[in-house]
Image 1: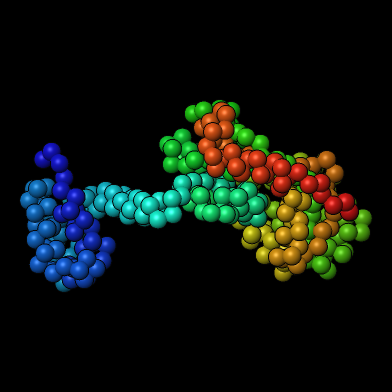
Image 2 (image 1 turned 180 degrees about the horizontal axis):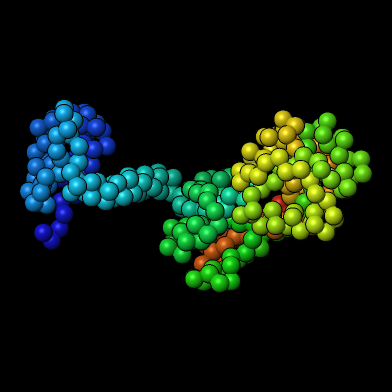
Length: 305
């Protein structure tokens, strides 16, 4: 067997996916006899049965499970390709696939990527959120165009990645108004034993906070460790604890979550990077977000306390 017949494989995949011959036939707008006939041809080609009966149900054999595992990789990607090509034809847009490290606040992600989504639809943006190491693996495999992160790419990475600093922002603590009013008095020492929501220890920002607390001799009461930055703010909005964010998104956070600033951390800044495989920025999307972030998002000084 030199070449697999992908049409036959598609009918087989549809049977497993839809839960039976009749359901697959209805989904594909053909007769059940057509579906069964196509699968029989595939079985002849593979020289083995793909299904066996268990009661009234058809279930994949060992050969069928192997074939389905590969079909599950082939056909969803094919559908994705068809969608991308349709979009490219109808909109004339360029697809940009961005990996966002889970430590990056959602509002920072929005502000950084906003230029790509505005205007005449020149770019079609696809975002994937995951831990930084997983995203760097996808970047190395060219499944991503760039990665947004709170730290530069590790220097001991197995492939060459280049970290482009988008900017930095001072950090402040925020909380629901009753808690914020109490913590404002005597800040930052007021954070001693105060309820706090923090990122997990996978985040570079968590390490920065831990070092700052140690230097100040402050031990807060950690109420929760959360990777999802939006979840941190939602918990805080309901009075669970205070939290730290870059002051670059202070206005949006106050407006969206009805919280109040407790105080600003002197001498501490959060940094944000776009990581790519380019030493010099050539990708038009990367060039656009880098320029906008540096001249707009991270250029304004934070309001003083």
